[in-house]
Length: 285
Image (cartoon, rainbow, N blue to C red; front, side, top):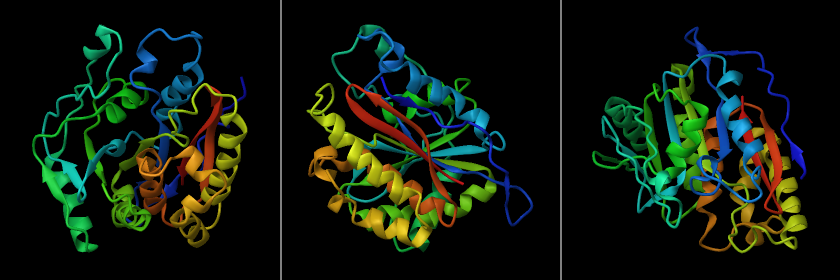
């Protein structure tokens, strides 16, 4: 199995204008359903991805004051944010062992931050709804159980927009970039390759690798070129083999992350061949 978990070293902390520390922005893979918490065949299929996620907190300049997480599993007509003070879990997967429907992640919400996010997006011209009932879907609690297992950092989830417009998602991230200077960690949770027919099929190994090569070059470009390339991601080599039409919801969290990354350098921090396909994670700042 081809695994390339890049150096976990902590880059030099970037000072925020107010004298604090600027948080980076992340795009992480969240695996397949509750894959990290069940038996799999082969048994080590998700071990290296789990190790990467478990190591994320150690690469941050400080413990986040809060987390804003964009998952590929919440789409709404317009952007929405969770305003629940104690969000329940949404077990939005099926056919898995019974114990995976008993997983817990009691991280608190932060209604005031949800209102702040709605205000920032509104100021940027994007009407945003605060949902007082919505809980955390598995794109939130599955990776966060590994990244922050104590569940002691408040989490607010931001939805995707159902029209899946690349520009709208980059702009949403851009509107939230200032939160990084307030100790807020912005995380996109999805998959850099997400074609259900491709997993386990060796014909998709070179396909996913070629798209990943393009995606990495786009992320690692300067900000202006990065955004221009990501706006046209569907024209990339094997883009629609990697994210079929209408199914790009697992890539869009990366676009939000790229927008929030603003002028920060983008780089690949994890890459691995899993189930015959290349999967990667990226960091801005």
